[in-house]
Length: 192
Image (tube, rainbow, N blue to C red; front, side):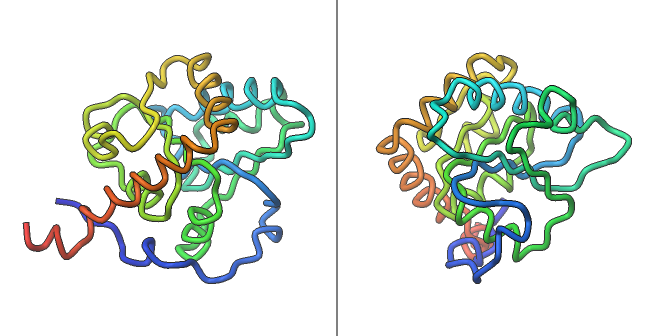
């Protein structure tokens, strides 16, 4: 069984997120840009949802991870350059810890996973989750997340808008996810 590093259950050390171009409310995705990670659908859906939001709501999308420069990086497409999307390549563990803890929402568009460690870390950090309806991810989040078909960018766009406006549901999923994450601590994995 897999486990979650215990630090994700603790408060992250202070980090100047503005130094990374992040300010205020943001949604987070931690991923590589391999094709099955489906980042093009995330960026397309997030852009659509953002453009449909009232202008008084300030929000960013932060995509953090290991990016292969020879693969597409959809956030760099001309259609999205004017949007508040921040890409952080190769963030440190401390930066990731802080990113999880301060995110309003964790979006994981990957179409296939063995376990979904970043989802588990986000749950331990108290993030509400949106992920793909894949057996491994459904088993991981149980009933503690929005689980949708991530092939459908329109559906993801609507789900994002629902998550942004439904604070009670976000808090419920964040709470349920944190409880669920405790089942994946390394001590439990070692006992198993």
